[in-house]
Length: 538
Ligand code: 3NM
Ligand code: MG
Image 1: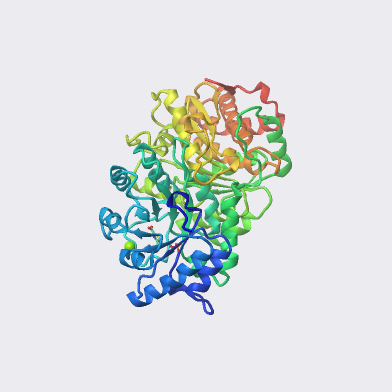
Image 2: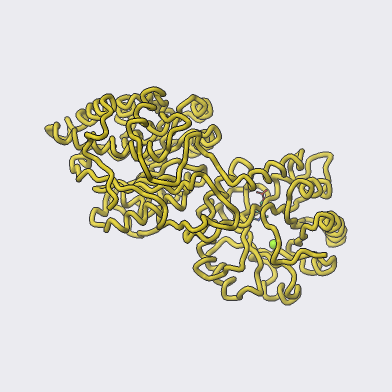
């Protein structure tokens, strides 16, 4: 007997394509390998096949699916779906209008729709629960499978916008899968990141073509995908992620850094390079300002390496991408500093693109940058320096938590008060269920109070060097060390050193020098209880 459409398991949804079959395999053999190893739903999608052959294939694939009680969906061809009594149809934006498809199919068949825009979700919500059963959200990443895509990659954050639209439009019946360029190297972070802001839903599954259809060992490929989906945990750094802001041990963080002497790779702007290198040395770290694509993987494999990506000026984008992927692969920390995030459209797009390339341990920005990343503010920044000093602190806290939550990262928003929120959820994810009770507003945070240090704004690269400090302390952790402790410690240390230097300097020139001296001294004394910057729960 048939699976009721309410009970469909969307978790691993295979879409076929006979044009990419490796030698020695057939459409049926690949589908069968998928079914045997954990595919939960199949769509027959054959763009260049005549009707007669398509029907023959559909009947054959249906036989296989029936053996596993896995529903079969037909792409585009409502007539074929009805003719062979398939379980449903999937259509795109340029295919037969949805109300017509539903009318032909009747109420019990599964109807899926390709969705990439919020306006499409609004339409779907207006139709109500009897029309669409699920949507394929995409494309997430670039794909070679779709020959002439009319859309561009939306990244996990684009998927989140669609999930948010489903929530705000009350379309709670609609199930979701993500599609486009999904492979084992990115699936965990897609599963971790793709959830609605209210914490109520995450995607119901992963949909893909080439990772199984083009695989010379489709059985093994499917098993790998299945394991990642069931794992529910993405340890993207080999240090500890935690879900609470309790008991920050600064002393221990600094001891680990001094022992481990982290290699801090900087991909940063020209203005920051020399100062960032000297700051890193003062912290007992070892700076390398490499922007060479071919050595990024080698550097990422060095014990205690970490990467700072500062987008004030950017190395060739492929170089940065390679580095981000390598540090994720070898589970080393990455700090992302979106300099001037919304100062210009170019920077906005560039930063958004870089943010789709990996999972970041920490995103650090000034208030304008964090407000923009949280999509709280549309006002353009003046230049790339910190602005918005008059912004209400509850708004800044909320933006910090929102960015942390969206990117499942530790977010630092700098200013007179520094806000630090931990949205890592310990690396845990679950299909469908969202973050179970937690929304952006309820994730743990800490506020650092040190009073303003106006002279910080009179030298170049002070904010960028906080990025160096965070990357150095994260990189210096033992595997038992806590990422959140490292980030908070970096902010406390850097702000305290700034205060100390500001009291000793004669002007902005000597402030530069005094700041490095102060960092050098505070690290070697390691007495955080005497520092000016302290935690406060505002
Ligand atoms: N639909 P692969 S992307 C069939 O964005 C399809 O709606 C997409 O193939 C959409 O897993 C896509 O090989 C192709 O990248 C996905
Ligand atoms: Mg179509």
